[in-house]
Length: 98
Image (cartoon, rainbow, N blue to C red; front, side):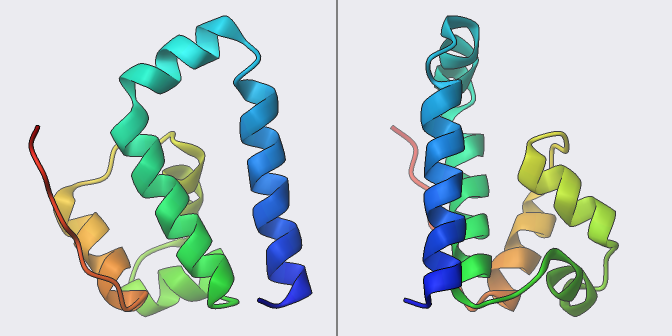
């Protein structure tokens, strides 16, 4: 993996670890786990492909602000939005109900 990409993923891990120290955040994270898991997978795939938010947005036919809000957890995306992201990143969606 490219050093710059590894650094970005390490930074993402560090931020998550720091935020997990906050009990309120930890409780919210537990309730929103699937959403955060999707966001994390998208961010990791985008970074591994050395793709910016702007580039992802352009390929999807949306605005960069939509990608930014999605990645920050401030946007509740539709299933179609997630499917478009997956397609652009060359990924597939798998859904499991437990």
